[in-house]
Length: 164
Image 1: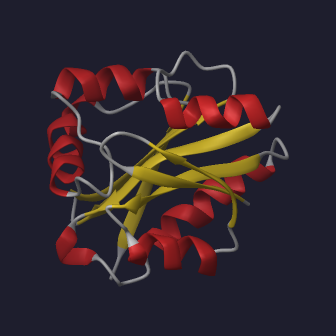
Image 2 (image 1 turned 180 degrees about the vertical axis):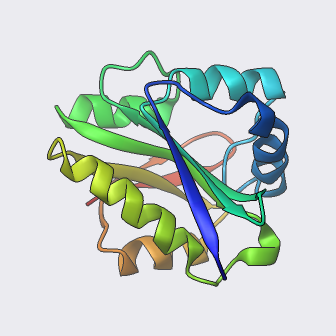
């Protein structure tokens, strides 16, 4: 499978890809958080530190959105890492079109995130749902070398916090 990864930093993004990214995000709920609108996605990406889109035949089949410490991001999960680490890259969401899962594409996307984080010697952080359980993601993150450092219960879901 011949894919390409377009990487954007410091809030940059391709406005022509927002609809495709939004649709993949919404198709992956509850594994990733829902977004109210494309405008909310645009707001999220515009404050991101790192954002990538995975393309196959010029179609978006995956994306990631990450944040450095010190960003004005409103997520309670992001805030957990602010209170525990000084320097980090938070993987807020990474999603693959359901037709292309289990083909090593998430691993490919994470490898680029790792390379980006290595430049500034950053700890990579993420959270994974434990209620409802996202067992494939828990297995994936463990296989990729992440270690669980905490957990939190919310009213409608629970998460485990990971670092690498």
